[in-house]
Length: 409
Image (cartoon, rainbow, N blue to C red; front, top):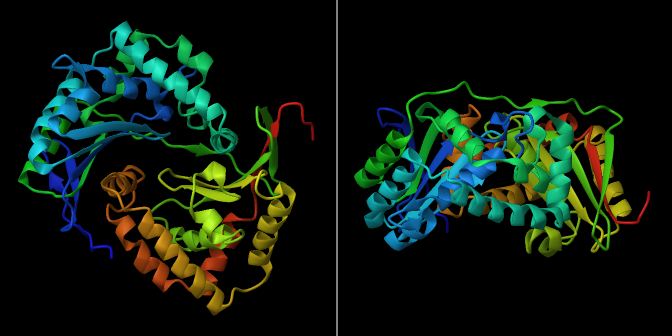
């Protein structure tokens, strides 16, 4: 049974703000720093710089050890996640260890190590992730949809490419960190065990950023035409993959809860155990909903190894057509509302997920407690609400085709 979460009033860190979610059943503290320093801050020719800069923080030394090792020795963990709008620095620790962990992370934020050796170590890790991502058709398909949907830097690969990564220098990283890792660009979110020590740790971390701020960057989306758009690529695969990309409402949008029900409906195309377990690449059909950016994307991935891509594509398109022409019945919607509630609850099991949802909401201009009102919003939905969202967002799509090398369509 999930324990209720209570969003406390925002805490003024002076400077900066901390949003807290108290969980009486937690044993750890999760603290996230959401820094508006994502790929939209990159200029032309800098693809991958946001990721390399964030990764460099993890390799910066504290007490003779890389930050990740030093934090682990203190009893915690630290990681970074890069997106179009922001970088998320996530910290998990026992409450008694949070002060020491925060001091370590703050030391790196205040004085990152941008030497060539440190940047090269970070580059090696990211280059390996790029290579792995290039072999993952789901990741390739998501990148294709984003590149076609978002204009400018927001459409670039989050990690860049092997070629662009090789061109970035230690000086580029130092300049990026100095320009964008600013106190006014940071939102802090904490959950789990939140006490005076958590607030003190958040204050230490936010204060470590240099003073300054920038205006938030905006993602610019290209309209998806009625005829749709078809893009294709070839990879070292044995079977084809298909990715359908739709525009979608972001967290906090009035249609967001309805789109979660639409997601449940589409996800029920194949056997539920196949859809809801295993990695995306192992499922016949998977849905990736990037609702932490505005405008959001809603991607349906079809695995040609497990289902016939043409048949699955026809079913998805048929559901979209039915949504435009046939009213949903109450029994059908009740079933999918229940599925949507369960799926949403599963997305907030970890401390990182909960802190991320709060920070993501604030970053895109939504209410900090938007994630906690979703279940109630789903309960209030009528069949007409769900159909309205389906009509609005499922009419037009980008079709990304990923073929095995040597196959032509």
